[in-house]
Image (cartoon, rainbow, N blue to C red; front, side):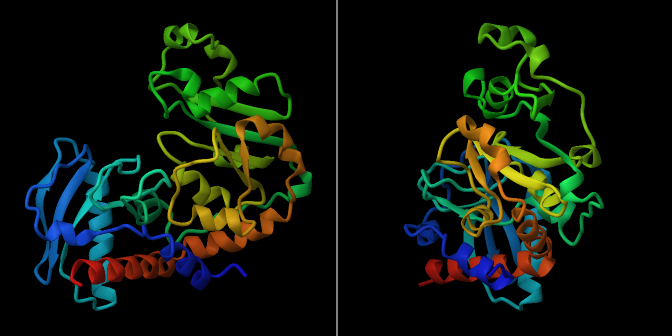
Length: 310
């Protein structure tokens, strides 16, 4: 059964087995990758002890503000040091890191709620009045060219758009090229005119029965938050079997909420059952409920603290 309790339990069980936060007790100046911030938490609040040269300040403020509100709401008595990764990609180093996504290749990530969900979507509802059966029998993707650079043939979004460009029922297009120029794509044999299109509103995208979610720098945090609540079906498209994951994405796959297809399997999208739509709408209400995000982070903080001070 899809429920908040099952989601939180399942996701907390994904906490990395080899996590050893105790090491941060004795290290005063850990080597920090780009985007990382070293923070101390105690009864007086949170203090930045060190940070890398580049930090996403907005994400830092959003997450630490949310963390402070969770500590206050549940009256948690916590004292520990932690590293926060404010960038998209999972951390790849040896220290345990609070990250907004993880990957099974790297065991250093303790996956926490991402700022996109916390600041843009939490507490909202997304409605779509068009019946699934009356929608276009096609799958759509619109997004930027973020992802692998400078090898265009390894960029998941560009590759998916290119490999499906002649499929009438698959409408995958790039709306904003921030990494790749026409000249650069020409070098890899990609015609930019065949994989680009204008931006479409969420309402326009919902005219299609299926909405594709394709990895950029990491998974599309925003797309799942709004698409899951519509009468379309969100479909995860990825290049390989290993993907970056949010704290809830594995749960979605294993509980028949969001189907996954490799790029080479995209043509099979029409075989996806419409019943996914019901599960997605149920899950969306759970995911965007502030209590879900708060209780998940509370459990993660308590587990981290117990290991740190054990």
